[in-house]
Structures are given as C-alpha cells and as structure tokens.
Image (cartoon, rainbow, N blue to C red; front, side):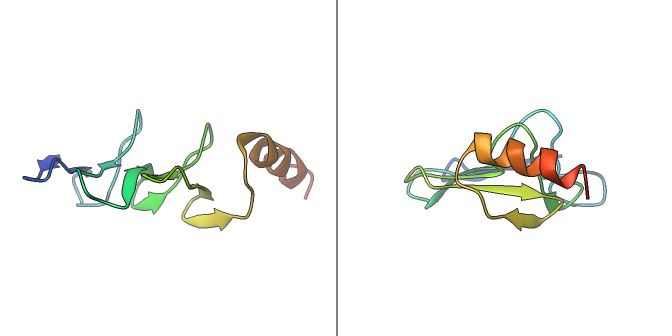
Length: 87
C-alpha cells in the first residue's frame, strides 16, 4: 500500500500496515522535512547496500533489522558485516 501526503511525503506499507519496501525506500519525506529517505523491511528499519536512513542534511545512519550500527561509511558497514559473520 502506498500513502501519499500533501507535503509530498510517501509511505509504503505491507498488508499488516508495517512500513515495508523491498526495492527502495519505504519512506520518502516531503519538502521541509529533516528526513529524506528511510528503508524499511517488515516494520524494521533495514538496509544492507547503503544507509537505511538518509537525512536532508546528508547525515546517514546504517541499520540492520531495526538495530543502529555505529559506522560512518558504507566501507565501515561492510567491514562490520564481514566481522559479524565470524561471531
């Protein structure tokens, strides 16, 4: 389901109403918002191929299944994923 708002914001949800989109951001914020894009899978902020949260000011956050990953670049995030594979 796709909900569009007058400010230009778009929210994509699954049948249960959870934020969800497998092929792009589930939330696209409209003009004047602090946020810009958020990637969600089954109600959890999640993305493996880039930051899950991208703000209008360029600030980015990496998330896996709703858990914040304290890194500052995609390179650091990929290093984190490789390290976690061994734990």
